[in-house]
Image (tube, one colour):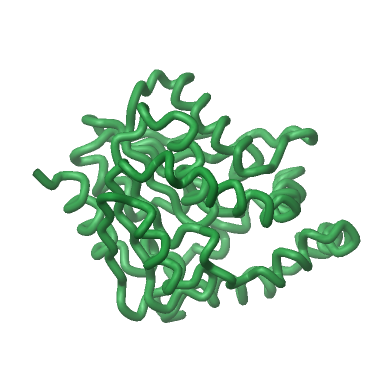
Length: 262
């Protein structure tokens, strides 16, 4: 399992979204590392980590692997930051081992109250569709570019090299297939996620959302926030699904303000 590490201080672990990897945090790690030991993982099946053909793709399995990573690098307790599906992964991990998680930072997290993308999930989770998509997707550079541009509210904010960076690990054998397997358990995963939220209601939580997020509905932030006893919501106006890339300075300030509050 590949990961990046920098800085010193309390441990802060960053978890990417579906088909993302540690590359997602290139504008955040140098800033956050001034006060924290920052770990940015490539979850198994993503980025440049191994992708065994029999790797289980459900949410709970991903969360359990994240906790085993903490064991492997000897992190007894940490702050967890997750984006998109990674947000769901860190919530599940916190529910499994709540004594190990100090605080949660959830960035446009996949959650039971957002209906966006349900049809796409069902479409790409279908076995026949998946087989066809696997054959053509590695050659669809144009499609990947269109998807990336949809995730930004302002297309002019996409940094140079972003498409190339996200495309690089997709040529790794098994990465795309694993992403498609994730979609097959999506609905069941969300039901389980909703059922375990009471277990983490006591953990101080920060919700970060782009107001123009087309992937996870910003309106779902309100019902999600009510699941926590202490929850702060920060919305980035005019920003899409990737605020850590589209508005990194504002994002870094919000994260540090939450983590360093008295």
